[in-house]
Length: 149
Image (cartoon, rainbow, N blue to C red):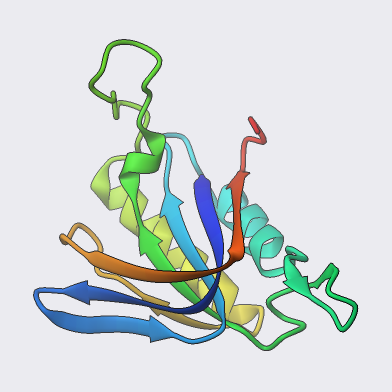
């Protein structure tokens, strides 16, 4: 699994002209599921992301997690995060999980984050979405369950 995690003041996702998910202070997580991912990847990613210390404390140091600030999460499925651009100019998405597995693990990730005590809003799987992100900082980090970066 691969995620782009952004610290936000607010964020929303629109499908067919309607807001389907919206949060205030917290994290927007763009989540890609890779072929071969399992529940082990889900658990790693949920635990890692909700505990990332990327929110500032009273001394303006990044010492606080999403849990520490009682923040929310907007999670959007994004298979294009698995695009391989090493050859040519058109990304290759062969490593992205097939839709059935990807949706199952995406939903499992959302469930695990909720179990950890975070309120989660989502986009809609396999739909064209417009994601509005007000990145705070800006702060953006990459997380990969295979730890390739």
